[in-house]
Image (cartoon, rainbow, N blue to C red; front, side, top):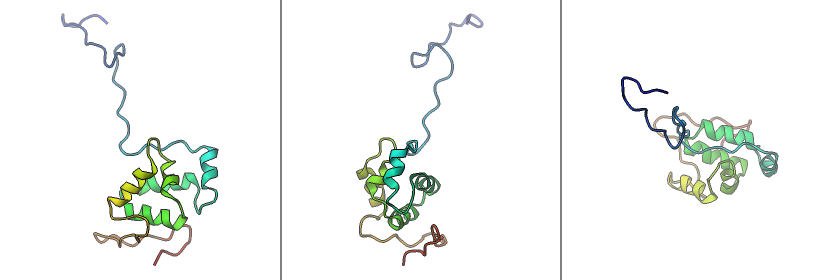
Length: 127
């Protein structure tokens, strides 16, 4: 492209020949595509991989709901970590630990006037 008004052309961005830079990655964890082998790992639990990923996406800002869901469905932190790229079991445990949740700890009661969580898949809420 010729210079405009005598100004030199802009240098390439990140070695690309012109154009806009790529968009930044989405905030938060990046979910892996649900493959049959991952769905197979979830087959012995109370949830499937796709439903678990959807629930996590919808409740990322509610660690108590996530923790309660994981406990109700009998999912381990390692299995939950397999839903994401670059996330390890220790990362999942650290996420819950930073919110005062972890193995052997019950979910905290709702705060800020939030209503109690609805039952999941028709199961009664935990006591």
